Length: 196
Image (cartoon, rainbow, N blue to C red; front, side, top):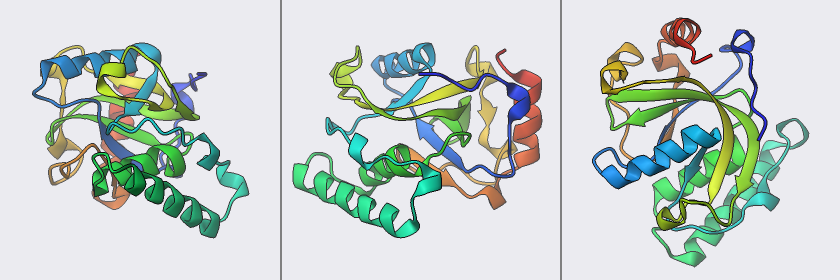
């Protein structure tokens, strides 16, 4: 996957912000998920869902909202029919990673609900990977990203209250309300601390 590699082309005015957890905070074995994603410049989700959603991806400049909604309903139907860990978080996470996230969008990689341990931006389209070293976690849905910043240790994690006035919601991923974020803090932090 080819990432965008210039920190100075960050556009905070025309992007969406998301939050994603790469594994569970208190499970040591889940650290493998985070390491794999950092090493391979991706982020991924599992939910025991090995469906290839490639045919539902699109070029955001060439599709209308009606078509996006049609594809969302088709994806939700597939998830319901599979009957594996079907819940609103599963559906939302697939929707974000397959349909909604666009190149340039910023993703905060969380450590629980109150810390951020990495920041990336979407660099590539959705990708289904049938086999990876993460097979034990059933993670097959990926997006190529550029990691703009990664904490070197837990002491460097960013406290959520520097970014917004409340904890992250429960779950694997969320679309963040830009109006509630301290976007200027994020911009300055990324520029000052970018892992170049």
